[in-house]
Image (tube, rainbow, N blue to C red; front, side, top):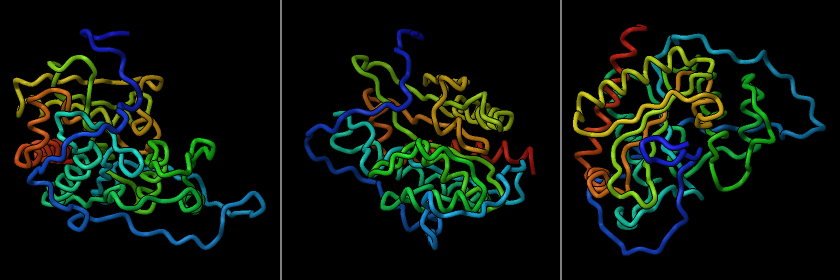
Length: 288
């Protein structure tokens, strides 16, 4: 299926690493110490078929939660660099998303939210750690969907986000930050915003989705904005399997000169994350 000449979107938009000239990009600070990383997990018992684990009742979130917690996921990372188009001059999607996730956390905290970054770019829970945590909290998962390698897969991110939410009594929102690309169409630009209509919390996802779309349109009136209300079959893994309101935000097309220039500009990234924080704050105000 094609929409406006754009090919059907894959579940994950990545490109293989390519050699490119080094470039110095100012304004991308180390954000890992400025935001709250999810606490380390101590595993006291291995997960094996031979061990009988006493599991608590299945975790079911109640919305709205008592604590205004937002879980922010920097897309890609570790063995998965994400997109690496030439217009980023050697910078990778995972570096940009990690920076923007940190900025968004600080913007949200200034509004009174609690935030957790799903990862800090240095570490993510292993297969055993994640299984043990999920079992201890009653978080459901399908073990065959775990990849157990140096890629923090979308499914693993979803389950880990559910665990963090379960530990804290629920979450206001899970938001995943990405950078987009498209082959052979350098003129295509703008933002893409997704949620899954078949997620159990889609009623609330829809309100954050609408709020983000509205705020982005207000602050970027000349930009193309594509808003997707995805079915289960078409949805991203992280917007389907998270047990909380969830939205995926594509911050621009790094294969377009104007979008790439905006992504490389620290002030523009700050402005965009402020737009997201303002939208989230306005919607949360409805529930408080």
